[in-house]
Length: 301
Image (cartoon, rainbow, N blue to C red):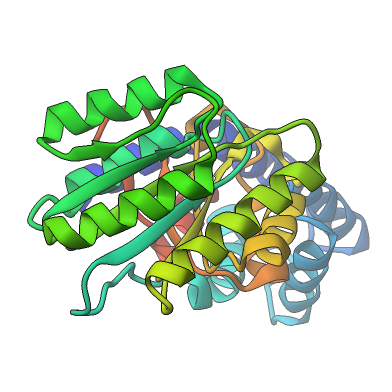
């Protein structure tokens, strides 16, 4: 846990520097008044925490009995506590029932890290008999990448010809997985078709076909997002939730942005569970989301 906290703190450095450094500049040698509160609000908005979450944080922070000349570390701690309160309900563990196979559908725009995330998740659940379905049939590179992960972890990959019908492939792959006695099946999907309507229809078709094979599935529909997208990430969560019933988020690439506050906006406005966050390319750089650790790292504590 200590190693991961250090990695998390390092990964969130760009965001933390913006927020923590800004707070230090605002409050150093100054009293907490309307002007400094307004400056604080601007810092949170620039870190992509979103208007709604920022407004709530500022309102609760202002209502507290804070020493008018409070030290900066105390201010950061109070802000971290308010952020943690927003994030805590979204801190949930990804669990599977004993009914097999358990189906995990990965969705998201191209570049959000779906294929790599599947490989990392398979590594975390390597005690189970796992298979992959290469449902991103439009990108040969995605299929090959999934096969590399499969070979590395001795996992069967169900794939079809380039450009084949993804829903049909899922149907065949799921039936094969059942026959093979697989416990856990990860399904990769395309992230971009000709337009959003096409993508929506393909994902809806995939979900319908999955339910034909296993009525209760998919058991988890996880959205992979790239934190560098800022406010676009919030739009993606809302859109994919509407399209295919997303019930979990995995946020990647937090180490590459100063917009890490977007996770707070996602939690506040969507209430969708945040299962994992990624702060690097390594197989162990995808870790379970912890609200308190994230909040403290965000404030440089």
